[in-house]
Image (cartoon, rainbow, N blue to C red; front, side, top):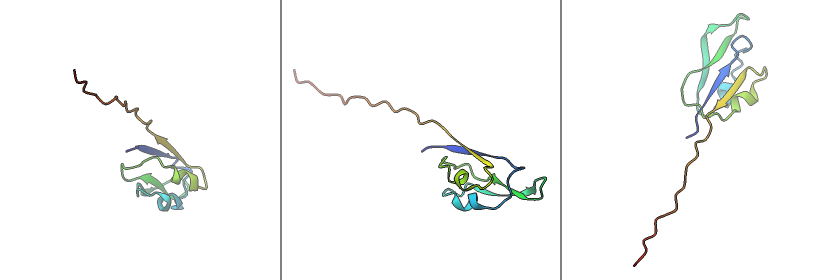
Length: 85
């Protein structure tokens, strides 16, 4: 499974909740804390982010950066063939 995480600029976030609704994993939620502008900001509430970037795409203030772990290369080995001899 692909893993990801988000970085949210808390002082830019207005808590519009568009990213919360856009997250298919329900990874985001509103913080109980309030930023300097008086808004409850979004935070990562579950560690199940897949890095799909839906949250960053819908954020009107570009307050979200998404990071994805690189795919690990899976080495495929040739099947072993028994040789009759």
